[in-house]
Image 1 (tube, rainbow, N blue to C red):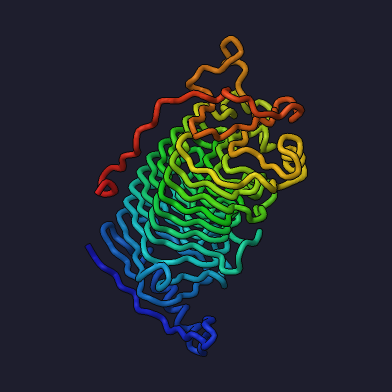
Image 2 (cartoon, rainbow, N blue to C red; image 1 turned 180 degrees about the horizontal axis):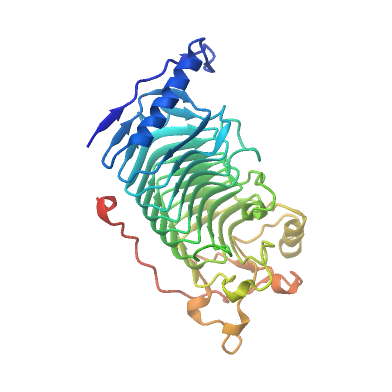
Length: 411
């Protein structure tokens, strides 16, 4: 194993705490950028690339294609890779490799995605901060931490701030744990999309548009199912939606706590969910999101099925939903001083699977949550008759097993 340490560039901090650049800073940053790019290009399996404390400026993307490499900083608030002046490349750091670990550094103000990892196995992302330092803006990059088409993934103790799509995102992947992270001021705080077998727990999602999302989208390489969302804090996710128009997350109403869209076998339990102004939990199909396409059901299941909600602690929320349609819904079902119930369901089911007018229990939305009510908005009938039907969701489902990571990730 080689440990490759890269010398620190000069950095001057002004008295007010803002970063300033001495006349020699540009040359120093150019030298550091070139040195790190060479280390990534020449890396061999087993190498550890250590980046010391400091702020380093880059004007183009970094990339790694070698398996078995670790990139390590001195801490997410000590080693900062800034892409504020980026002029080339679609990401801050793009990794196309397996057996990859990255830890203890920050990636700021990337032109596109901050950290993208694709087509790899055995991935660890630990104590990484991704942030767009100007706050929530549509011009920010889409994703903070973005593993896609990966297997056996651990994401822990990370912080993601102000992504214009999702702060912490896992897409088209398998066997994933997302734990002990914090996501704030993103459109989607944490998103699991078209992924099989994920555990999302001990996270904090606050001040996003939507706190935690579990989605299935059409026209991707794989669907997804079997996600557990538990022991998270999901509160005050009321930031206006600043997503790029036409993207799926641009349809998420501000004030959404946990959202399940067209995904199956999802468990939501033992979470603290509060003060999300549209609804604390939303269960929906792509029909409600306006993402349905002609012929879509030939190879895509748009209905959320086998969703089990139990043992959560709900408080507040539903008092000021986003948009005129949802405001009208609240007024119709709860009056001007009331609130939308904790669980909002669009009411879409696959009528071809009904038996005597009822879904088999394994496909139903089941709720065992200390009197939490479900509001069926009657989406299939144009929201004409929304209402709460007591007892309609009083059922339980077989619980999913815990995710077991393999190899060194299991240590």
